Length: 193
Image (cartoon, rainbow, N blue to C red; front, side, top):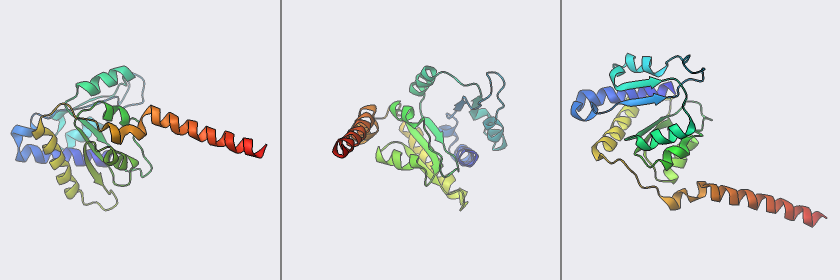
């Protein structure tokens, strides 16, 4: 996730230099960043933000919070930021609550992540896709800067979820697919007998 965070912090720094009135309103909270026991987590994001001069615009709380507290905070956020990993097989398993919160969203992910395809299919959020192997980070920083600008300039707190595009990912649709799969197995067994 470090590479995505570097892109984000560089974009914030550039935004502050170019449009301080717009970007000085930005403060990013990272909550639940450690798997350590409550009160023992070591901050990893705050020091990185500090190295880019963004310390005063970033707060990191390492302690995990409950699922319902998470949902509450997602709904209260002005925007949601989802940094991704350079691990080519990484999938953000908790992306669905972010989508369902219907807040302006920016995702910074590896270009081949399934998250990119998913977000595009449901027409959700600003997407910055990077290729960490071909490190042309200045272009990614500019993409991220433009995504920030689009969200900050819009000042909209709620987004409209494309229910039709999201339908294949709902519990109802996934349950239907699973039931259909089991039905096909039962039918094959019945034909064999």
